[in-house]
Length: 68
Image (cartoon, rainbow, N blue to C red; front, side):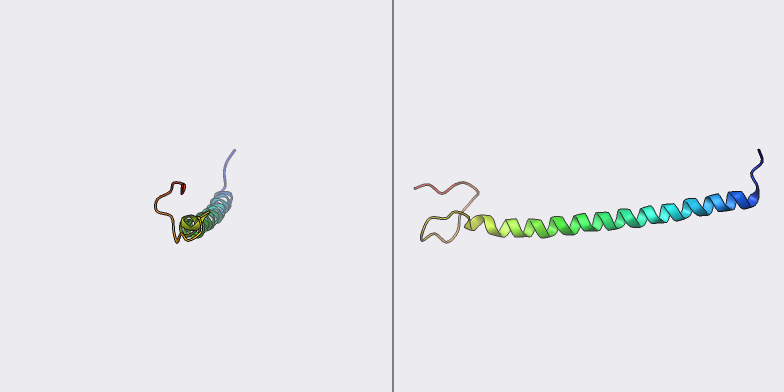
């Protein structure tokens, strides 16, 4: 079976288009993951020092529980 020049050109063009599509999809997926991790991390980092504090306490020092 002989591969003609136009068949080879068509095949390489199709491979190039698929490759570009996959690169764009990978880039968008990575960016979405990075943005979601950054937004989630900042929200939890600020809040845990104020969870379940006894009356009169302003913030928790460290990550342990406050005991009386």
